[in-house]
Length: 219
Ligand code: DX5
Ligand code: ZN
Image 1 (tube, rainbow, N blue to C red):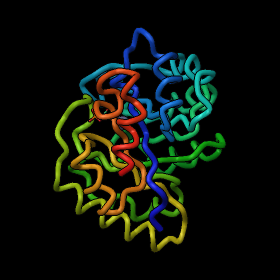
Image 2 (image 1 turned 180 degrees about the vertical axis):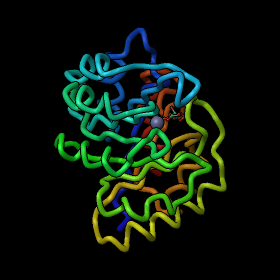
Image 3 (image 1 turned 30 degrees about the vertical axis):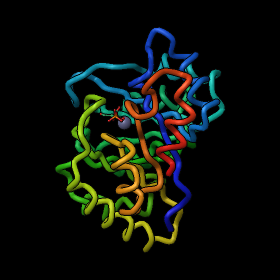
Image 4 (image 1 turned 180 degrees about the horizontal axis):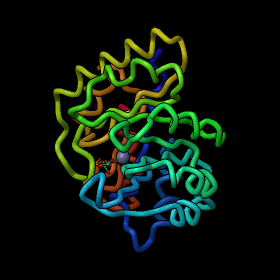
């Protein structure tokens, strides 16, 4: 069942020189999750942050820390991110080598497990994982950078995954990431998404605008 829409601002678009403050501001502005994009310059062509930054940010918010691991391999870092205070750990199947084992490990650490599908990765990839995951993340851009345009073809995949999730009868989050704005947010929700990651659209205009930005995306 589609759950109420939650907004997950990606701190990739925050002011990195003032990250703690930014996390406090976006939390006070009505965000539901704080989305943390972890990139390794290898699985994706960009480098961002690691567990130390998650740990440093943890005291600045009581919201769910939604950590999106775009790193390969992810397994050696799961414990560190769990200890740093992540609530959800989301991994890409292509980061290898054993996605099911990775999901098992995340759950054994007491965290929620997410699986993320790149634009070229079929929904079918979830067939034997769906019963074990807490979140499915559909990438609506190729991962690596904020500020890209939403790939409309991914709406079909969101619809297909909504059906898969509903069949399980479990409350699995269906999250969409990339190019979410006032036009694409309603499209993603109509297709069945219930968590919207938004970097550019959340942080646009600075702290005075965060509450209105988030309210607008929620629709
Ligand atoms: C892309 C990241 C996204 C990105 C979204 O690899 O996973 O979370 O920051 O940024 P916007 O909302 O600007 O497309
Ligand atoms: Zn992300």
